Image (tube, rainbow, N blue to C red; front, side, top):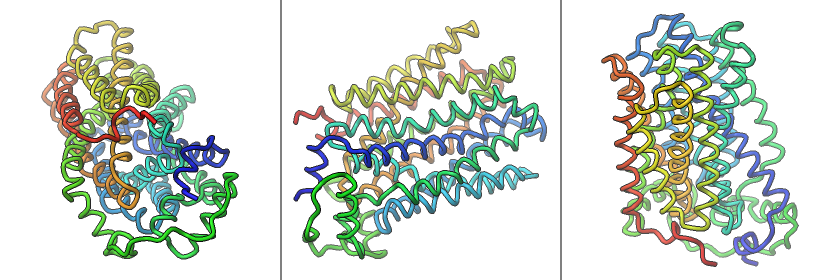
Length: 444
């Protein structure tokens, strides 16, 4: 039996729904964990008298950790399995978040945000990979974008809870980190009980006990079992150990994948820079512009809720018109909106503009994740996605720091938005240059 073909041709089962739902929920928690600092920043910066340039570095500490986690932790999923890495990273995130609530100095914030970022960077690629590997081909774009859309939903939910629960005035900025950390800890037993290992990992890597694990998963999905595992070629990629990991990284720059790898890195770098400028600085810029604290936080909520809608719409439309076209269209529209942001004067129109930017910017951005998950084959998929995210996260690190410098020079929201529209155009150009049939409409 061809397991992959069976999944592609069969209806989605309850087990697949559980796995996809868990991946979505974990991404929600990751959104809470990373963006908690943005929600806490207006109060934290005032309590500790943190200047804008130093606040930008605090924002980027987690992003630096995420970059290293994507490069050095995410590829381990191609060696030890997706499930084990997910549980490891959730443990790291839990420790980092809860400890941040007890930080008393800025250097402690740097270190603990870095640790949290390591875990988040290691886990994000596995969410995209697991969603792709447990979904039928005909729904893969939609499923992966839905899962990744959990990230802004988590950030938006946390923002609503913080405002409506009056958390910052009542309990102070540490309560934001404590809440997100406890929720992250709560998902660990859910993963242990309900999330199986990836079938494609078990079939292609074949660790000890793989046949038994594959048949248990197939039975849970209501499919026939198999009598033996498929034969594998004796190559460096299929053998275990560090050699396999190094071979996977080297494969990213093979003749077949080099062009796609470099273009994906450029697209991620540019899009990450603008994305994390928005995610990190919108509440603080709104506060600087004179908005009340709750309105400034709600600007972030609007950004993230509209991002969820943009991501899901991208997945739906990509299945019909092709992933490449929709990514380019969404990033291009976001660039136009950011360039013309100064034309929106009233508070209501500013919220509308932020919503439209979130819809198009994060919708197009998440399409780059889907592109990476589709371009690379199973044995190097987590490595390819992880390294692309890691390379791109250098843009995420630079973006908030550069924005902090712009704010220190006296630039407001409009001028800053116009500057950060430029990387979006460059990201769209990189996707335009990709030549990959996996990004075209699925005709089957």
